[in-house]
Length: 568
Image (cartoon, rainbow, N blue to C red; front, top):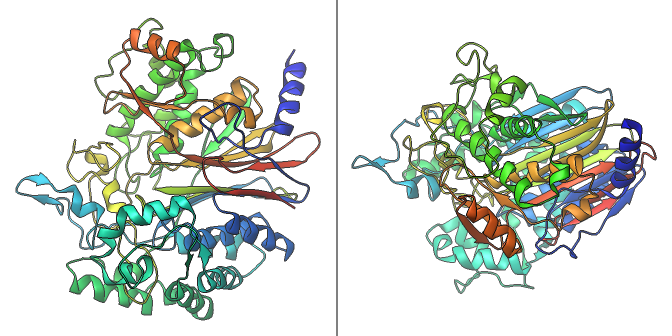
């Protein structure tokens, strides 16, 4: 029976490629196929750059790095070298590498730096000079290339610099974001120069956006090395601007930045090994925790996206997000229990779920040995793989759209607003309405909690899927739902793309559902006590897959965006 089930799944996986979801079932991502390599990103130019890296002799690590640097040009509202990333790599020899490039709080950061008159002013952590942490994305790309790539980092920087210099056509989504934030850009000289035309209007759809300052920054790093960025001229420019504009980040903060090599975490689910990122990623922890909870239930007989299935997953989401709010933080500063991903702990949580009504989750639970068994010390996702066996799932971010909205004059680099991912005050929601506790309080050199969830799935020791998502806390639910569609229901992922998404993060106590959820399902969920809030879309995902028998790659981008998947 197991052989039959696996063969059936294998046939589906040959078609399966991405864990992206769309609003209407008939709409599916266009599948790309490859024999030697595969890549999926949110922008055609980034995907093309990755394929070119393959053709120049690069591997999956080279492909993901050049894609990331290109996305910093053409998708700069989501990511760039002014932000951070988590990169999960499965090497051809079977080893996993998890590189943490999360931003760090400046040395002058204080616990109450956003508190005014006794209350947290979250505007300060979201916009302007106090909003940014020291960026780590470039350090990750350099480390990945030096240790595991075949091409030098400078080649990838120069390829992206060419695009920044010649420009790219602004699409409707990018134009809409520029228009939405034009008034804020106008407050900052560097941002005005990049994102507004001389007449003060934002660049419109179809117009060509050129970024010569960003091109010069990329070329300078290519010529002088990452030291030019971390402690050199770039760091000094940022430090001087911050000093003159009320910020606290200094050149020393850049000089002292280091990537962290984390131990990946994993669980076994329905016979598959699921590997993800450890803290300060809350995403990896809670994707695995929710899978462990759901392991106690047989979802397939319930029917995909039936009221029973959705109810079960919502209940698992609530429980996990309650734990997230209390326990999760930077493991170098706080004790994060390993027991959160224990199957035994998950069984105790699963026992609390009732099928006939929504359960009130008052707060966090406590796994065994929580005190002593601990982890050691707006966003985009893109995935690549090559025929040698290298796989990469990378999620990069500058946090909310255009980060802090600050571009330091002369650099072209959008700085993140990742400080908003800390708990400005325990219990005070951030821009994503997430709340945190002492574990995620601000401290100098600390890394804020993240929802990024780069994940790789293996069957019989061989990687078959690299997935992840973008969209704040919905990253976690998107990744979970994609895994359920493929691993529980054997769906081809282009079918899974048409499934309606839903998300619950414990606080606020509401279920966000895409508008295509059927009326009977919505009514039944309300009858069981769930409060529903309808939204148009929930996030964006990308993934690549490989059939374990034919060894053929497939890949796809999220059909919500004008991305691209391509094979070689």
